[in-house]
Image 1 (cartoon, rainbow, N blue to C red):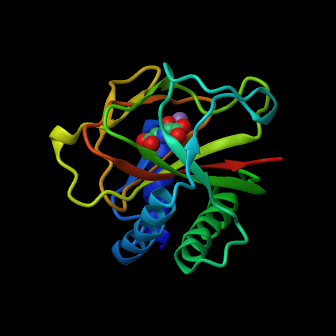
Image 2: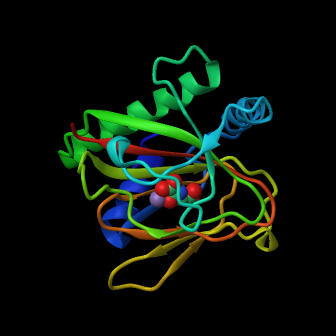
Length: 198
Ligand code: OGA
Ligand code: MN
């Protein structure tokens, strides 16, 4: 556990983004993905917006994913394990980096073929509670031709292109790192969330 937490934190401190290829154990990836497939096929996801709760608008020139918010008091076994992992990471981050994170929020996201999320930062202009972004992928057998890479644009460094492969997790500062989801050619599944100080 500590190793993958360190991997994310070291990567963030040294390069502006931490990447852990196996942050979510494979069996848990499969469990989460099965649950998300059910939610998706039962029509529970909704078109994502931009802006905070008071300024939310849908803009399909900026983003075209569909999302479903995870309830932190969930009774679902897979989601409980995911939340436990997140809480363990937050505890470790607060202890080692004095980040004072005291809240979080996560949603599933599905990008259908042809969809994307244009270059942006995750912290709202109207609300600075989001401190860190944590994105995890639920895609088995993802190939280069499937596209959908997460593109990172560090201020003084080269662009980083990250394939959204199963279990991989990316960690960066929400008000600093510009990033983009490149267009995908097959459905792309993920969990995106924010560690907050409120
Ligand atoms: C987001 C986002 C990145 C990804 O939802 O804000 O940038 O790789 N997601 O899904
Ligand atoms: Mn983002």
